[in-house]
Length: 243
Length: 243
Image (cartoon, rainbow over all chains, first blue to last red):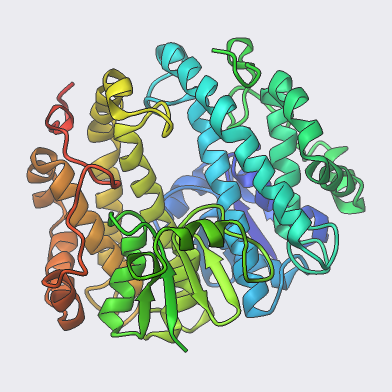
């Protein structure tokens, strides 16, 4: 049964964590709003049209038969075992979900570096606060998060990935985080990357996986841009310790 | 097998969503850092001492036999079916998890009303930004979130709760959100509550459940205070539309 991803057609955003998993697995899926469904498909699903049960609060949304679910980590927890990218055992499932939710926390903090006051305001209307928040993020959070994933890689005795003996959706998500951070904050990443060699090596191995490599080279991979989560504002490209 | 909750002993915080589920269910659990374990128990678990596999990034943490997991929604997804507070079927599980993750998003936004710049700074060092963020939260977010849960209650044909035919952990969490919002933002809640009568009614039914009522009346329920997520700062007690 085909998977339907319903997400903004013009950004990587949070939908990219789902796209990467589906592409890596070679799953049969359609990116609805990029096809003939258009962005109206997003409005329809948010209004709960055409299905029973809880409607999503926000995209990304996965539709699979009668099931319509939202929230990135929830979608990946559902998809993982089905597409060979998630542990099927209970302990492994909850370890992967825990790590994915920590990725989500990091992603939310990255988003708030450029929107610390409100998502309803333009960046230009919160530039001063954004710089203050970004400086704090660089000083207190970036290495804390990436160091946490470095330590998690060290603790997994089963191999050079985050959970268990094979690559899971969490590894793909960490790849995407490194990609995004490099795009948004090249100066900070130049400083931090040497301190997290396992994270960087995992990023490189994920990039070389056939499904991921083919996807990244295809027009299906939307380039980073100034509407997504990871944005490049020169005035926010601070190294840790700069204000 | 006894559940061990490892969380800050002096606040409700994110741990309260776990406490409420365990208390409602009458589960056999110990609140480790409030007992002889002390806060050292938190440091030990964050350092991965005494167990295999992924260490938590932050509390709350649940220990159950050999399994040590973190992230509120992940813990509740694990606990729910075991303590009679979560759907056991796949579709129900993912609907509950989706809603719990939306609760988590709301809780994170509430936290950032008083800490929009940095959790490493005192509130007093980000008061101006906090007021600006709070005003935007009141105008754009509070009713959007609570209205979403109101609509979810309306969509659940199986009864006056969020998922399926019985009360789940998500209902308990929504109760806690209403409690916290009333504490932190009484003026805004006076404005918004009449618009979400199903949410208010659910709150009242949860409060009357025997396990919850006994817990709320006990010394185990830590009062709201100025160190938790929900804080009362008079200058942030804005009604929607105020700046």
